[in-house]
Length: 224
Image (cartoon, rainbow, N blue to C red):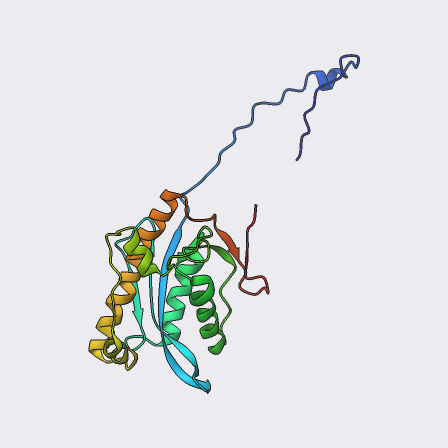
């Protein structure tokens, strides 16, 4: 039932029944909870040639943590888990998030994950709110916007885990030693990014979140 309450003109005398109508004060209960923000990063390896030196790629690792639990990082590695199981676990976390965040995820990680899901014949990632610490930065020039460079610039506690060619080759071959290296790498990226996003927000360098459209030609947009 809808009740419209408005001021009665002074020259109108209401019927007795209406005059006797008493509407008790309504009790408004608003339930709220903190926003759930999922911070994540992926790694991938070259898989096949498309022509010349252009290659396709395959997801080899995904790590994520909730912004309110930064020390609790979940990691899944190809070589320890089937790719289908890795994607299933990540999508389950992704679907619980009010917003996702990462470094260049709108240009790399999210499209890469959609490609992997497509290859397995699974539904694409749902549209969601995104805050990308590279593509959503304030307009700037003359500095590197890599996560490693920004981390060094702001002297973040967590450092980027550097891997040389030998370590990457071992990681991409899914050897035990290589998997140990990539676990540290992807975990470190999430831990450093949690620090980076907090720093950027505190300094006012990060634009508001955008709505990422998984299935649209317009991949993201601000929504008032």
